[in-house]
Length: 348
Image (cartoon, rainbow, N blue to C red):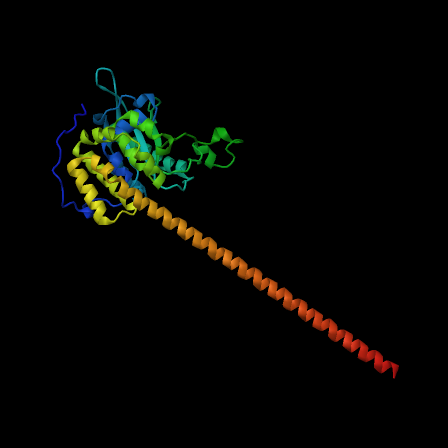
């Protein structure tokens, strides 16, 4: 059902990075139904989605962006068909996937999800009423299930509340009057490299690469089985190989690998597979170490500047104190002189 192409590409020495997205957008990952089905089956722990296959998924994101605007372009909305044992469709559900790249937590995610849900339900109601006038007013009318999921790539622990009600005042005192739902967070950081390796699907390799955000992460990735990585990449369809290359390009840019070197690495991967990435890990490690060294050097310089400024400020304060004491002493001496002068005149 998920037959992959086994063909090896010829070496692409004319790889043009401008033809690829420089900042890999996770929406492209979730636009791919094969990757999405693996994500829903193997990473959400939702029994209803345990048997979802690529052909059960329809991307309907663009349909709703007309209502929501360009600020939501990085998110995806999937219509998922739940099938009976005989393969016939039993019902439809919707899956919202919000993408969070940064370590800065968006604490208003629940409200953003609610906006999506309202738009989906409103459009569903309008569609059903066109099919059968007034159907939404009937007792047995039901709105479709919407499952909200946040895919989080940041290193910090997700600390935003998972319930909508926690964003609304009087949530405890007036709980029964407040709408509520829980969204699920799937974080790349919640899995170890070993756990992802055991899953051995194409989505696991996506997450392994997305976990690399520091020199330490890169060192950990080098411990992953090269054979496992090469197996996943080699058996992936061409469109997923292209996604891998875009993600890797973004990683190489993050690690400050020069454009020419990055282009060579990506081009060689296109011809020889992911093994070439492991062969060039030393160069990537050096770039990451240089970046860390530069960062440490900058931090040390900033600390030195702060220390120098503190010393200068302390010296200035000390000098001001000395000058103030000298002025006070001089004033006291002048007062004593005037007092003696006054006393001598009175004696005359």
